[in-house]
Image (tube, rainbow, N blue to C red; front, side):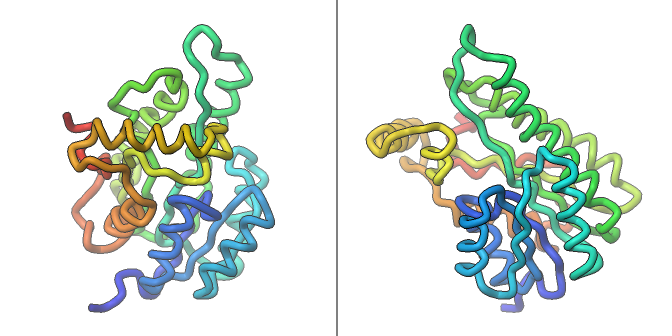
Length: 251
C-alpha cells in the first residue's frame, strides 16, 4: 500500500510526547516532512532523535505569538509551504467551580483557545489550497467531568472554531476537522494534572467502567484517526468532530 502523505509537509504542535509524538511518528512513517514543536528543549531534542525520518524540532510556546512567527519562518525557509497542520498543543488542570482563579482561566484560554487560533491563522499564508487542519479537541466537549470545566469549555470552543473556519476557508478548499480523544494516558497526567501512578490507574479503571469498549485508549489509536483526517482518505470530510473514545461520549 502506498504511503498516504508522500510529498506533504506537516506540522504537529506539542509533538514532544503523548498524542503529538504518536501522530508525528505516523505522519513521518507515511512519507511526510514533519516539523514538531515543544516548550522543553531536552524533551523536544529527544523526540526528534526518537522519530528520525528527518523530523525537525522547533522549540516554542503556542501562546507566545513571536514563537509562532519564528516557527513558521523555519517552515517557510526549509520547506516553503505547509500542507497539514495538527494543532495538538494544549492542556488543562483540575479546578472546581468555587476555586477557579483568574490565573487559571488566563493560562488555559491563552494556550488552548488563543494559542490554537493563532497557530492556525499564522499557518494560512503557507498553506496551499486543499490543505488539511486538524484541531485536538476532547470528548469533554460533550461530557461533564468534575473540576475540569475550564478545560472542557476550551475544547468546546475548538469545536466551534472548526465549524466557522471550514466555512471561512471554503474558497481555498482547506478542510478543518476536530479529533476528540477519550481517556488516553499520556505524560500530561503527571506533568499538568499532577496525578500519582495510583491515581492514574484508578482514573483508567473508572474510564474502562464507563466506556463501551471497556478500556482506555492509546496514543497511536488517536494518531491513526488524525492521519485519516490529514490524508486524502478523508477528502470529503470537513467541519466534523471525530470521537475516538471507545464510545464513552456516545452513551
